[in-house]
Image (cartoon, rainbow, N blue to C red; front, top):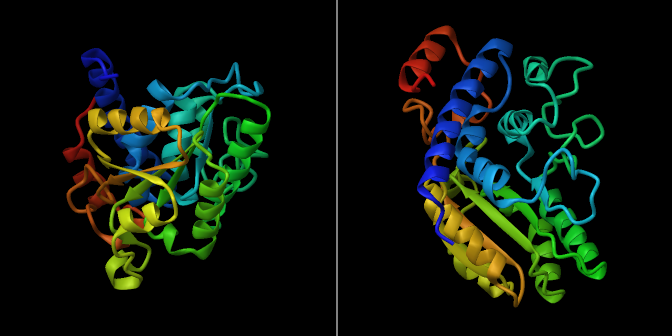
Length: 276
């Protein structure tokens, strides 16, 4: 189903505001991961504000959808999204990565309402997602499991073990979304460990592969709808994105994986972001 013009406009405004919130927050606390948070903004907002059946009211319902942030370092954008959805007060964002605070540097299911799984070790997300999806099928639930992974993350062997299992058990309630921004901590993916033909690899493991523009809400929406409608096994959306999207001097630069934002950089970034 084509996303409505009204919803498209609403999500566009939310994405711009979330990017501004992220830069304000990470500049204030002088820690966190801006690059990977900015590359998955549209993915998170579309899932939480349009596609997923998950709210603070149904958080304990077996029939809810599940979301796992496999690339746990993008936690700041997940927290901003969860706060907007009312899972916890927005004031908590100011305590990100502070001692004894609720919002840790990577998502923690024990401390943060709305976090389904503690992540950080790369590859853990898709592996646990397989277990969740299989459990839901055994209970005859029709809810979905969504896992967002980084392209550096799929260099991990555990990812491909999970891929084999998901295919074997025909987990058509599992949708992986690859935040394919081409850059990881120490450089580009091509420099560190080239992944070659991503479509061919996932298809060889029995997955339905869908291509999408990770910053185009309509493209992502169509891809998610196609994945939900595919019944023969698991699907992965190869979402082409840009690390540091929205701030020119951050875009495509590995140093912005986790670099603190200086005063001059903050001021330059804010000039590029529309004030909502």
